[in-house]
Each structure stands twice: as structure tokens, then as C-alpha cells.
Length: 316
Image (cartoon, rainbow, N blue to C red; front, side, top):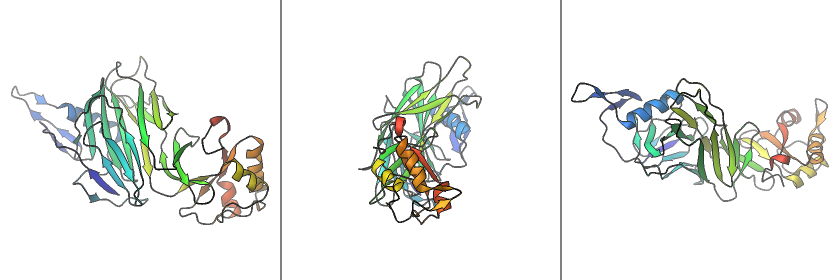
């Protein structure tokens, strides 16, 4: 993974060594901790730093387990986080900033934008799995609990709910189906005591809207996290309604699926697809990297249905 941290250097009154705040001393002998230091410490307490890609110089390359991608963090809060695949396609995410605060990067790789919105700090992290986090810190009870992240998707890409609170980012598989080339993880939020705070996503067009359900017992600050990856062909392939009907009738749509009539464990692919048709849904499959052929047992184990009342855009 190539990490480009194009962040303007800000003068700090403290040193950030391996992500740990080491305070300088003010003239009166007290510790002088900057807003950036506080923002870094809060975020890294919530996330840890084990999966954060170190910042380093622009163009530094880190091998990721799932391939090579380029993660670019913005120099200021009104910029966009970008995760680009080796073919040049990219998914970008805008931060929910109101003020174009300059970014400051810690040695551990966390870039913070203090006071970028009302009662709110923002932050970004490149992660070693080939993705990026956009982090929101609600500093007190007056901070807005609804955060909006505008997504920039490649042409032809769309979002499909994964059934676990997140979304797959899919593109055409080339002939039939749509393959997940990226993923938005289910959201999380933690308060100052490390207690989970209920949170969820909904989509407004291509804007990811995160709701954070704070309450009277919430300890501030609260850190919340959208995390996404892009550019690694793995995960799930989705079929639309017409393709699902073909499979239900015993027809072939892609070479890597076994014949729909092939049976394993008393089930067939045609039967799973038939259920999807009967319930006005579509069929999906877990796939091998590179779309390697699946055995009947593997195909059935990785099959499922999606769409219907969820209103997924590809199941139509």
C-alpha cells in the first residue's frame, strides 16, 4: 500500500513519539498540550495504532496483505480522503468539516483536524489492510450526533447493504453480476470510558449518514469511525433479478459457478435462486479471489439472497 500524507506541517509545542504525547513545559512549569496533541491522544486511545500505516514521507510504500493501493490524506479538513487501486480507480470520502482546519500528523500515522466543526475534531488514518478511516470526535454533548460523509465512486460503481450494518462497493463483473471491489465496514463509536455507543448508517444518495446515539450516561469525548477499502477483488458477487431468474431456471450466467442443478447437502443453486425469485429478491455468492471456479458445496455454502424491501439498487 502506498501512503501519501500530503499534510501541511504545523508547529507543535509537544513531540509526538510513536503516537504517544510527550508534553513540553510552559513558562509557569505546567504542561503545555496543544489541541492537536489532545485530538491525537483521544483518537489513538479509541483505535489503537496496531493497524495504522505510519505516515512517513509522501510516496512511501507499505506492503498490504490484500495488494497495493494508494491512500491519500487531505492537507486540510475540507479535502477528501482517497483510496486508489492500481488501475487508477478511486473511492473518495469528504469529511464533515465546517472549518477548513489544517491537518497535523502524528508519528503513528493519525492526521487530526482540530475544531473542524462545532464541538468536533476530525481525523484520518490509513490502515495496513489497504483502507482508510475517517474519524469524528464529539467533544461534548453539544456536538452534532449526525455526521455526513460524501462519497466519490468510480463510474458504474454502486453501494449494496451487506446485511451487517456496512456496505459493499461493487462494479460490473464483466458480463454478468456485480463484484465487490471495496467495502465500508459497519460503524462503531466509543465514549471516553471505552464503552460502545450505538451507531448506524443510512444512505442519502452517495452520502453516508452516520447517526451516533449518545445519552445522559455518555462520557465525552466520543470517537466514531467510518472505515472503507477499495481496489481488492474479493468478497461477494451480486446478481440482478434477471440473472437470478436464469439461475433459477437452470441456466448458466458465469463460468465460475457450477451447474445450477448440481446438488450439495440436499440443496441446489437453482433452488436458492428460485427462493430469491419467489420472495422478490436476488442471489449473491461469496467468491474466491480472482473469481476462481467454485465447487457445488462451496457455491451453496457462500450463497444467499439480498434486496427486496432493503431496496438495493442492483437488485432490480
